[in-house]
Amino acid sequence: MEKNTFQKLLAEEVNTYKALLETKSGDWIVKGFIDINKNIYTITNDTKVVSKIIEIILIPKLYAFAKRNGLTMELPSAQNYYPDLTFKDTEGNLFAVDFKSSYYGEDGRVNGLTLGSYWGYFRNRDVKKNMDYPYNDYKCHLVIGMLYKQSVTDKNEKDVYGIDELDAIKSVIEQFVFFVQPKWKIASDKTGSGNTRNIGGIVEIDKLVKGEGPFAELGEDVFDDYWMNYFNTTDAQKSNIGAPHYHNLATYKAYLDKQKEIRNRIKD
Image (cartoon, rainbow, N blue to C red; front, side):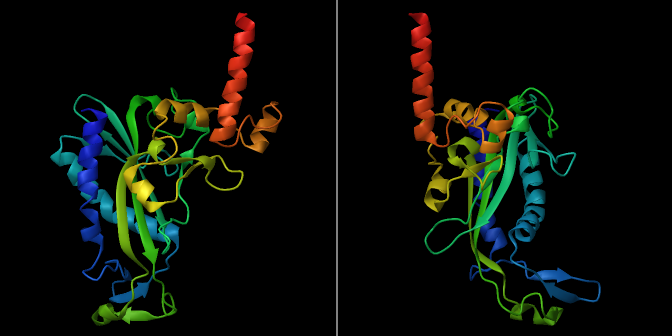
């Protein structure tokens, strides 16, 4: 299966999930956790909690999607392994899919989206480093984006409800936006946060849905070169290169121009 075909099929599948996870009024269908005595404990809108619950709901759906399309779906063998899901076709082609979630505000911007490490497996692409398959073995690396609005109430996490009071519980999130895009198309030229080794994502919802990040027109090879050679301040010092070569696309271009000038001098 070609990577574009897989992406198209996956996007069509994911586009159905909004209706799956929302009530008619746009609230999240999940209200809390229930015990054997039918007590319902409401949940927090913490992004880690919310994203994990969404994943738990969607994984069986994605497993069924794989079976319908002649694919197998594998979960990672360790908790911190990349990617979240590996799909394999009958010819052995691999497709990496990662879940990424964040909440958004009235301005149409997400709070933040990180797209995984630019270190480790991202640079050492022919070895199994925190992965079950080498990075280069995958035909593409896709992101299932799960965006939502927060709608927490003061009563959440304080009260316990009975099963007959389900309608009284306010959902902590609402109004989902889903998308499927290649990681490189929604990547920013900035790190995820601070001095971390995470690739940052763009924050405008419209651009995320359409895959219109700064690398979208430049190409995947530029995205790879930029992030495979990116150093934060600490790593630049540890690697004895002094200061980082660049910190955004403008300084990256200046760095490449300088390297080209040096190469031209050597040729002369």
